[in-house]
Length: 115
Length: 111
Image (cartoon, rainbow over all chains, first blue to last red; front, side, top):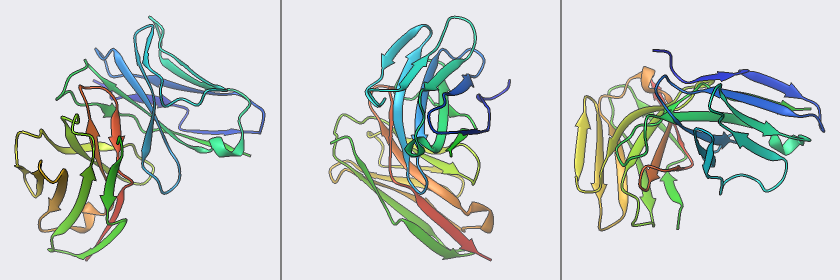
């Protein structure tokens, strides 16, 4: 049973380009969470999705950022017109359900560098 | 009110010593308090977690102490080893939704 798979592991984009980050949850997991980690900081929640639905996007910047989790395929975090401040590690976590004791398993992250 | 405050920011311990990391929270609706361990270039991995109806939980060398009235919880690593050198994050969650993380503690265990 593979863990949470994120790709690419490293992504370099020039300012103004688009970044697409992919997350395949663990088998059987239908809940996906995206977090951003700036250098030397903790993880900040961005968005929580269940298959085909956005449950909580309160941590997402209002512009340029979007996320989806289609019925088939991985969850995608999309950043349009990237700026240097978007450089960070982006982590995806998945869980089998929503519940007080439900563990969320994290992927290895995608390290985005905007040049 | 959603914040979780973590201290210290960095910690150096000798091999065999006890590492103690502290966290405090404000939101009384939090009902799940996990600790994560993160090595450089890796994602966070769950170490140990506790519910607020329990004051202490121990798993091997790792113990969480929880003080509900003070809204504080701490991680104790007994007999610290160089392999424990990593960044540790406390977190809190309500109702199985998103995690709110502390700022992290960089632990270095000297041989």
